[in-house]
Image (tube, rainbow, N blue to C red):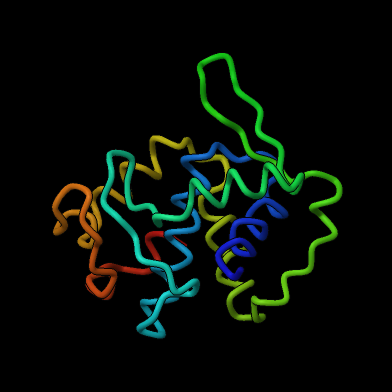
Length: 153
C-alpha cells in the first residue's frame, strides 16, 4: 500500500509523468530514504533491468491503479505512456506517508521536474547500486550511501 501511495504522491505533484520516469522517481525516493535511514521508504527491492532499477511489483501496481480507475494512461505519438491521476484518485489519502517522506518526494519531484526520461534513466544507470548488479538481479540499495544525495534531490 505504501508503494502505491508513493506513486500517487508523485502524480499529485506532477500531473502527467512518463511511466518510466515515474518508476525512476519512486526509486530515487526509496534510495534517498535509504541514504539517511538505512532502509527503503517503501520496503521494496529493486531489480536491474534495461531502463534502470525498478521494483518487481511496479508494472502490476500501475495496472491495478489503472483498472481501479485511480490513474489514467495516455500514449504519446512516439509510444511513451503518460500516467496521470484521475479526478477520483486525487481524493485518495496518503496515510502511509509521514511528513519527512512527503518532503523527500517533493524535493525529488522538484529536482527532476522538466527533465527528460532519458536523463533520469542515464542518471540511475550511473549509480553504484545499478552499476554493481548483474542484469535482472536485485540491486543492493546499500551502495547508495556511496553516492552524493544532493545529486538527485
